[in-house]
Image 1 (cartoon, rainbow, N blue to C red):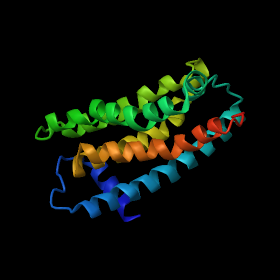
Image 2 (cartoon, rainbow, N blue to C red):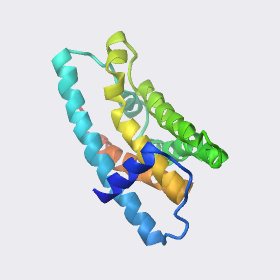
Image 3 (cartoon, rainbow, N blue to C red):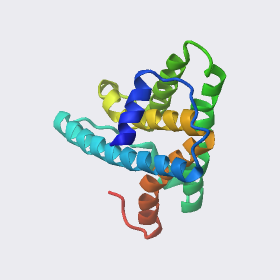
Image 4 (cartoon, one colour):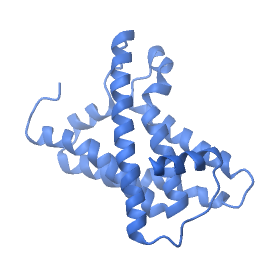
Length: 187
């Protein structure tokens, strides 16, 4: 819980102050703690979202992961989800934060990176009017993860945010890929 308090404090007033003095084992401990919290919060929000979607009788349509599962084999799916997407997304969304590190408006750049990261993940859904209405709930895990990734990027460096992102995606995607590998139906 201590790490969540630090992230919350940082989120209230983001400033570009690195923890350069921190040894790698401490950096890894921070990343693993945020990974754990990200998974716990993400699954909790996901369960709530499923309840809400059921309650409101909303059809989300086909999720992007379903399309990828139909069109690609295990290895390309793994590479895209666990290697390529984390690297590209971190470079695009959190890499540029360094350009604004000494600016008075850094916090707005930080917030924008979080919001853009979440917004991009709306493309995983078929965009209907109902989906727009519940969009904040659907991308809440990415909003939270975006804050965690931004914190790690600022405090520890871009390579650590890529690592956190890759581990997060891996934990979520590898079980799905194992189901596909073992030819279990996903429905």
